[in-house]
Amino acid sequence: MPVSYRQPGVVLTDRRFTVPLDHDDPSGETIELYAREVVAGDRAGRDLPWLLYLQGGPGFGANRFVGKEAWLGRALEEYRVLLLDQRGTGHSTPANRQTLPLRGGPEEQAGYLALFRADSIVRDCEAIRPRVTGGAPWTVLGQSFGGFCTVAYLSTAPEGLDTALVTGGLPSLDAHADDVYRAAYPRVERKVAAHYARYPQDVERARRIADHLLSHDVVLPGGYRFTVEAFQSLGRMLGSGDGSHRLHHLLEDAFVRTPGGPALSDAFQEQAQGLLSFAGHPLYALIHEAIYGQDARPTAWSAERVRAGFPRFDAAKTLAGDEPLLFTGETIHPWMFDCDPALRPLRETAAILAARTDWTPLYDPARLAGNEVPAAAAVYHDDMYVHTPHSLETARAIRGLRTWVTDEFEHDGVRAGGPRVLDRLLALARDEV
Image (cartoon, rainbow, N blue to C red):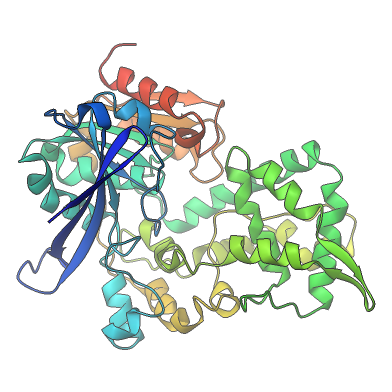
């Protein structure tokens, strides 16, 4: 039986669903999905339409809100909300270094993980929708990778949607991972330059930390090998609204004096460990490039290969001169599976996924061109994570989709802008503005 309980202003209900692991084999193995139902306390007894929230990632469970935080308060004015932990995340059947060996060896693990992309997530949503809404279509709000899933939803099961809302997550319909990362590295460089313009003192701090890591073997408290490439990857913070400020605060207290000379402080190392570890979201590393696979071409560690064409990101070459160190962004690299204890046992599994050549298409351009579902998307003007020109091209390819292009927010605008972002998207989808 579902369990209900209260937080300030809301009633929550824990819900669990059993779905096929492979929807093409409905009588085969099953997995469990977890979702949290949320309704305003003063509307708990009402018959309300449903809004399904699909979190960004891949690999992250839905937000754990307290009360009516962020966009949730606006949604609860008219909806019952379902916060879904997509397959493999949160309280749903987990997929990590501890559980994946139950599948068998790396080949079996990779085959299993190939079923954790947007196409399977959409079919999960359609499997549980009748049990939640009684069969009525629902509104879907997709953030980042959740937006990729929403576009896949419009491609494969639009009959399940009343309205489709996307924040920072309109994917290219046909770009290979290489195209995605060739566009990404220049964006990241712009974000790094903007950070140094805001905090010029961080130029020397970053160079000093990188130099220390090039000449010392540093292992963080949780066992993470802290290389200079790992340090550079902290630049993924720069894609969020407050990320530049958080990175600055991290860098300013990096060193402490010791009897043996300057050393990276325990406090800095502890913070870095929390930011770098994939222990809480291993799927992010394992299938991040697979979300771009749509044909017979392997992704083949795309971000690592493409980075070779941008030599300014080479830390050793940078430190040999006097240029600012460049951080990197939302990219996954083979070395992560050597550095991170949460990923080390899965290195071969990840390599098999990177070599896979039988990816199936995730989007249907013809069906999107005939779309009849009211749809709206927030597109952030210089989004570090999702290439804005790709998003706008896709927006033009989805019939009737209306965009709000803004530089007021970064990629996490639905969190930072909260009710205002959701309100604007609903108004656009309803043709009220």
